[in-house]
Image 1 (cartoon, rainbow, N blue to C red):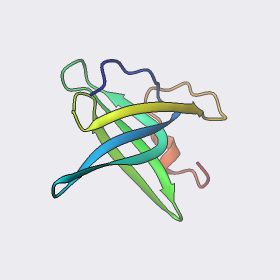
Image 2 (image 1 turned 45 degrees about the horizontal axis):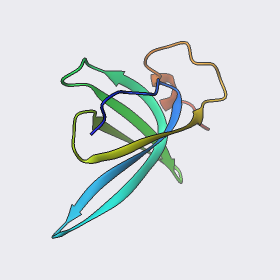
Image 3 (image 1 turned 120 degrees about the vertical axis):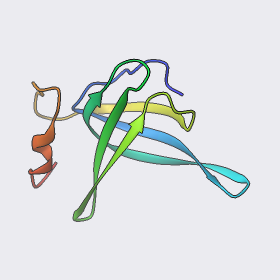
Image 4 (image 1 turned 90 degrees about the horizontal axis):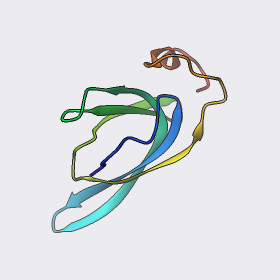
Length: 95
């Protein structure tokens, strides 16, 4: 579970999520660009977008879930981001 959000929209992050398969638990990594951070303390969520081949995948992660092991900030987009919600990245070809 995350205590604080140490990233902003436009950051490239890696989310380590616990996946339970039967009796075993493994860690799955989802790496992409943060599109938005929504909500306040109790119900805060963040949306991460990554490209897999020609298909884009977006996932919405709740901050207060115990399934998130850790979040690593890898870097920031090349362009300077001046918006809170980066929906324009959905229309771009190479993001």
